[in-house]
Length: 292
Image 1 (cartoon, rainbow, N blue to C red):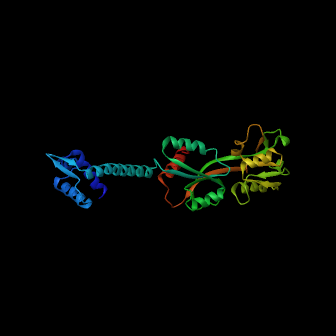
Image 2: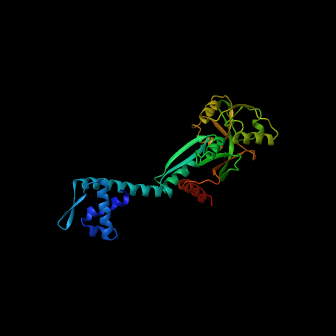
Image 3: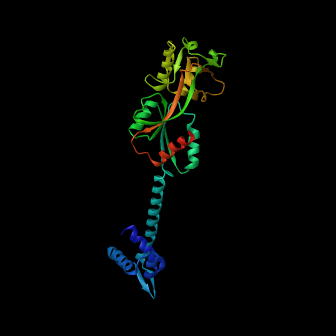
């Protein structure tokens, strides 16, 4: 038996006449009678019996009717859900976020949820270079990363550019709201990234452009630990503006670095030439709309 035959059987049971069931199904009576007989032959039992001008279910027919209702309902629900997933109304948004986080992501997710309330989310945090690998390997569909990186294999939407700040502990607190790279040349510095990654490269290139050599005492991509190290006086840190929003109130002093060479950018990436799920496509469309 198949779903089509079960739907025929449901119509026969509910109409209690072959002729009425055939009319409901928009088919002629003989083929419907043949389908009923084929089901009875396959199951080796009578499903209905004639009682006057109507049909009555046998015990076997009653059992089949219960299962037929369940199975057709499940099939209808499956078709509906698959279509919703295909349209992006359901499904999962599988996205990576850089270790330094993104000030934009929470707001984007709230607006996306307002449009697609039944979507679920899988959010993975990692270094930008690792996120690129995960997108290439199709573990993630989308990722918000720190630039610059080699991105020839990806489509990219620029999200925002932000300045960098110098964080110092209360023990080493400066009075100014701004500072230059030359002011920081001899200051023990902690970088919020490791060698070979975008933020590390950006900071080093900004010092090099000024013909300065920074005094790097540590590299730490774990932001809560970095903030603890700065608070304890272990060193000062150069961080993107995003990180300053994670500082517990009043614990650290943040001074904006004025050099125009030192800015950080973030972007949304996905793999070129590969299919994106409807859910991921809708997320990309939301970002594109907001940048028009």
